[in-house]
Image (cartoon, rainbow, N blue to C red):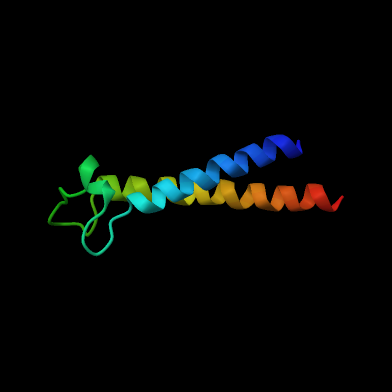
Length: 76
C-alpha cells in the first residue's frame, strides 16, 4: 500500500509541475499552443483554460490525498 501511494504521489507531483507551467501568465503560457489564445469576448477565460484549471485542481486533490494517506500509513 505504501509503495502504490508513493508512486501515485510521484506521478501527481510531476503532473502538477507540468500543469502549472501550462497555465497562462501575464504574457501568455503554454496553453496558447493548445488553443488557449483564442478566447471568447464574452468570458474572461477560454474553454481550454477552464479545463486546465479543473484538471489542475483535480490533480491537486489527488496529490493532497496521497500525502495524507502516506502520513497516516507511516504513523501506524
